[in-house]
Amino acid sequence: MTIEQIEARMAEIKSEMETEGADLSKLEEEVRSLNAQKEELRKAAAEAEAQRRKVADGAGKTQEEGKEGQRMTLKEVLESRKYIDAYAEYIKTGKDTEVRSLLTENAPQNGAIPVPTYLQERIETAWENDQILSRVTKTYFKGNFKVPFELSATGAVVHAEGSGAVTEEELTFGMVELKPETIKKWVSFSDEVEDMKGQAFLDYIYDEIIYRITRKLADLVVDDIVTAPVANGATAIGVPKVTAAPSVTAIPTAMAQLAEDAAGLVVLMNRQTEVEFLAAYAAGSFAIDPFAGLSRVYTSHLPAYSAATAGTGVYAIVGDLRGHQINYPAGDGVTIKYDDLTRKKEDIIEVLGREYAGHGITKLGRFVSLVKPGT
Image: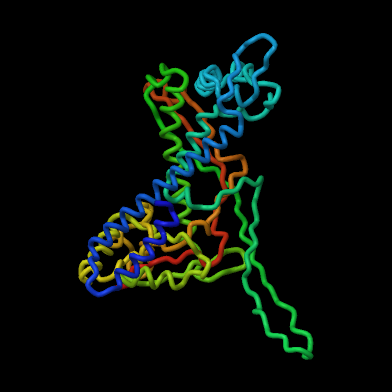
């Protein structure tokens, strides 16, 4: 099935669930299967697009390295085994002589040293595999990035023939500013890591750093939504709060607060909170899907409903994650600092990963928070 066919079938299922005598258990199982198929199609499309980009960039063309009279392009250098090995040694020692000797005249000799192609793709794949970061809007503007939004506006009017001029529209704009900040993560390794070479070394170091920074960025997205003001202001977009316990009507009630053009809606929650919604589903004899057909995105950064603070604690978010934006002024790569001296007596190596990014809500009416009722 195509994505369009899956969405059409899910719409049919929604109608069938409201029909008397419908086999809700069977329909719910079909919805889960369709959601899984949809996710697989999305991943396959992303992989196919990545392959198309490689072909467009000249992937598959080979050039003998070191052949007399030929100079490798920067792209070919960054893909080469020699550059990967040299980059690994650069990370370990901080000495850039060898890695710069492999760069062509196309590369800045006194600027940042580019990461190997496979490593950049590994970082991008981690971003895309994260259920939160894969859905937010990404940009790459330098410095602070300002995003205007319509705070208020007068509506259109009917102009009768022969009547006086209509009143000019009054628009008031707000402005969200995404100020970049450095997300850092220290990770410690045993000094046996230094014995690893080339790609094996880079994989071992970067896998942990990328995972930790990815999780932090995803948590910051959640924080931006949870801490947003309830009402819109001149410099911030508000996120309404709905006070309701998990039930078959809580999520539809939250959805009613969203803008009409909010799409691709998901529910962000702790996995333990899902159990509370399923209990409400069972108590209602499985008559209504408590998630209203929305995909669930799990995050332990939101507390379980049972652990949320009564009266104020946000335990779930309903919304369109495209309404949140992450801006990468220096690109979406992760830089590494390697320290094998500070804790050398303990045979410990410390590695610092850094990512430079600005983040915030940039579209109106895209999120609603569910708050635990007070006692």
